[in-house]
Length: 160
Image 1 (cartoon, rainbow, N blue to C red):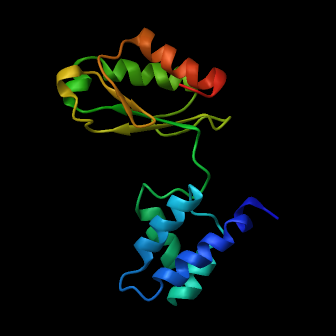
Image 2: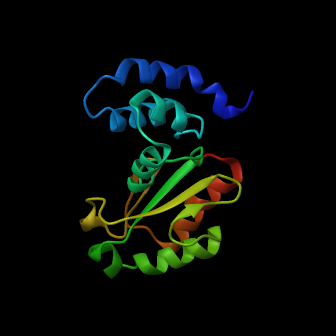
């Protein structure tokens, strides 16, 4: 049984609970992603059938909203602030360092699935720029050395 088919009981449960709700597609997608960690390929035809939508309509909504994932998430998510305050305090240099260290552009996941890199345009920590969020935890006044330590910790032993 593939990983995607392991999620079918959860998918069917969500569909049974939500399918008759007006505007059910978004709540269904959120519930499936919350339960599975992503929206498996096997969910798409199930959702389309339950809601009497085309596969293209379901794919279109998933691809429109950037927070929906169609692959399992990385073990760690690093969001570097790229807003004006952080830019003025060196965020662009830190972004270049991340691209070099992780061999990624500003978006993406490392080949080993350990880190997902995502820019963000304000973490609300302007007084402590530059800032980043790693697995939901804010890190402020980031230096190149501290960034290297954080990333290396995630890559080496999977824990940051």
